[in-house]
Length: 89
Image 1: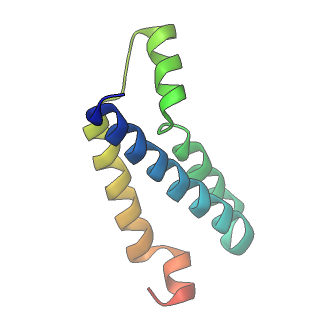
Image 2 (image 1 turned 90 degrees about the vertical axis):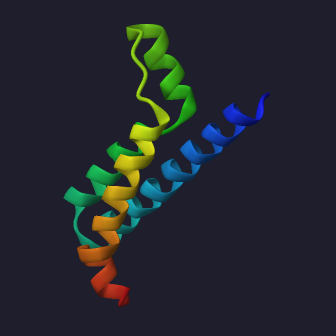
């Protein structure tokens, strides 16, 4: 496995775990609606889903778009989200 694919897979799995944990925490501590949103949002990041999407439709979401979208939503979550207010972040 080359370094580029290893790094992109690693970044994809990290974002998957971050948004999955945020979704579970929102389900338990805040409200089900944002929790479900974060869990569904975490589904766009895993590399196996990216391969399945490429095989079925021929489309792939580029890594830089995933990273940009993930950082923007993560920033909004930590800046004004209910979890941030609960824990004083």
